[in-house]
Image (cartoon, rainbow, N blue to C red; front, side, top):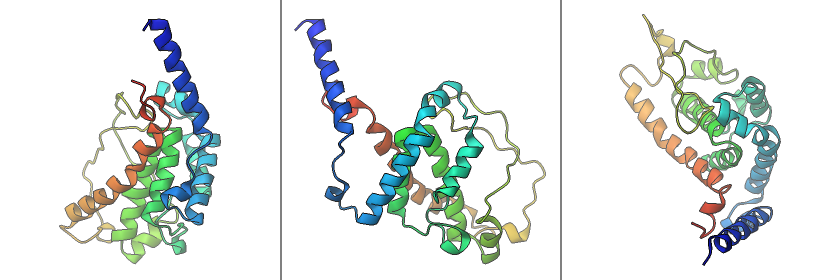
Length: 219
């Protein structure tokens, strides 16, 4: 087989894959109910409009200049507190719904979806699970202010989802801010990572679906 024939065949398969992506397998075949199907559709439309057009720029520049406005839109869309109770402004959905959100955001940008997962699961969900009533009332409705970090790393992969060292100097934690009890920090952290692994599994599902090589036998 000549190289030109091989390349033409590969091009046809890629084109076919892109055409099929416009006609996804019905979600009902995977057991999704009407509410979950509507959630996936809503998040996909949101991500296609608000995130996908900037994905290449985010990866190239290792930053997203419109991060703050985008984060506000995530909140307006009810996605920052997926598993948080409605009384704190959350959407009060289950972890499977959280995975669906993660999958669709990852389809648009794996990097920004990773930042989203860290916020909505490792941060917000941990306060939901382990925070006192006062801590929940204080932090969940409004999120958190920033704190001091070292310069971000110029890493390979997931660019735009910044990684850096956290700097704590003479840091004292007030008693009212202790989560889970004194000496229980490892428990809070490790149990949170269990849920994080579940939610972030939606990431590879999302961005692998955009790669023609991962959904065909082309290699």
